[in-house]
Image (cartoon, rainbow, N blue to C red; front, top):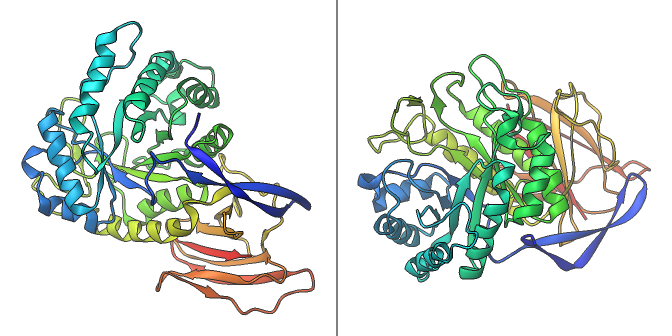
Length: 430
């Protein structure tokens, strides 16, 4: 069960005054070798061109999910895979032969096997989409499908995306959709019954007149459940404006979604959407990454810059284990106060989210993020680095730079730096 295997190497850390062993983790072969940045809604059929896939890569994407219109035919999927292969991208496909349950129906198993045969020679194939936002009553059937896919295509991912935590109380959802009493029970049941390769969920935070409470809490729930099950988790974030209750996003809000996710140890980031979907009877869409005519939308350049930062930090965090995430300053309703680690102490009050990581090379890292997406702040923290070499990631050069600072008698080093709105900085020591 699960997609992580442990290194033989263990890291000993001082956590809350107690020396403990932390086993760091490496990925299973079905997961990308580098941090996946993907999107829902690839271009429709007429725009499946090398030029458009070059635009995806230029914007920092590495994983292509299907178009949100048109039929998911074998011919279209093969075209997507061919373009991905040429551009060095990976694809997660949808195919009508993937059922929601199997039972005793051998024809459904044969359909899965035939599907896998159609795509087995495609090097750009990362995996298959099984379904989106199932309730717990569907988990037993989905487990059958995942097992059949794993048997037929052991080197490819079976992706199921789950509800967000507001599905239990939001006006557009209800507890009957989860089929559990609480959201945490929903996640635990999914991981136990389905035994997936990755835990994926979506959460759309920025409402028209306010910020939805629960974005950080959803990250915390996913982090906890995924850690217990030994699998990574992905977060699907908003990058389009549906009509109704959501606002058009700006670059700082996109960066907030990405950096807060990284601070919780997310192992993949998916945007919804890339291509502007067609309007229908339920939704009218606007303000996306790419417009329907194939030209850059208002979020293309902002997402390109955010993805550059994501890749920069993920280079050091993708294979590291997040051991704690907490907030400082004015603690949000769904936030977490510092309770365990004494590795980082904030000496200047700021609204931060800080993630503590350990990796297989013996480094302790702190990703320090500005939770305020409207204004910058001055970060001032003390790091318990002892006599270890201390470095920070220079965002301008994407290189680790030694920090030469006088150390206190207790082994603490004071570190200060400015952070732009929703910005982040990474420090590490060993």
